[in-house]
Length: 383
Figure 1 (cartoon, rainbow, N blue to C red):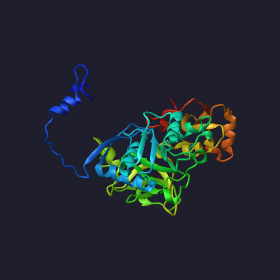
Figure 2: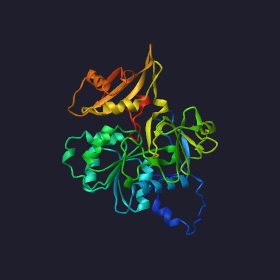
Figure 3: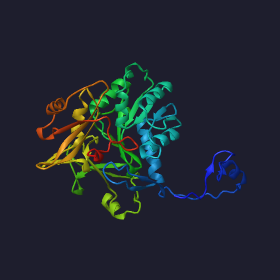
Figure 4: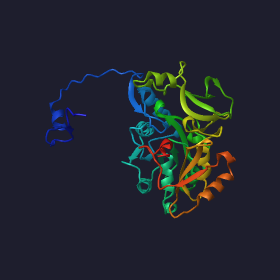
């Protein structure tokens, strides 16, 4: 794209650029305030594209601020907190972490990009009380030798979101970091977080918690959004409230498909809710593997494989099969210095999974394909 103007901070601009100090010096003292309502569009946030092409979600000022305030409230973020994060501030998760620190008056320690060693160094240096990250960040930190000797006693809680995290790894985080790990769930279409655990209520590992105050959540049948399922039944998670987007930018058809006429947003996540309102994600609808007529949820298989002591990270995806249509294939990243065979991974799965859910192929890889925010891209596994 051609640039009309290049503005450089300071008073010594590069050739062909304007100096910001000079522009400020020539500016008028008069400033016309532009009126904005809470329902005006603040941001067009693009979806991560983990299961399809990114779409632009039109988010209002109310949605962004409301989400930030309620998430900070649920996590009890205060002026006494020091937060370390490598989440991009332009992403909805990083945005609510940044806004939460500004709103509560806490200290925000930003990393330019995630590095496991640097993240741990900053946690120790600043005696951070909070770390916010996605599952892969925690898995990289857990795999580092010497983590046991670090003083992380400043941490009072951590949060994890972006994707479901195997309970075995969450337990390891709580043991190594010495604090609760509060799982949250969100999406670009709701300006960040939609559900999480209230800090004072305690966390239930494997659950994404309850809806933010003022936000409704329910589980509906996958083929009829009007029918709400009973507790413990698996269906699609629907969300309604002030955090829901206005729609997809320039894509009315996708908007009609995503938002029901009465305001309920389709999340595309299969989930169940217990009698107390706590929600557990089963998997993404689009990631489900159909093998010989049976449904396999990759997240369930990942949770089992992640419990193996030699495994640092794992992702499961479907690959074509001439007889069964699709089979499950596991892509495994081992911890440094660990070794295990494909047969051992399969035997480990057989102890906890039905026969049809056991992966038919195992590949050991150096890393997994991820988005810029660290979410594993299952659709890219087959490449």
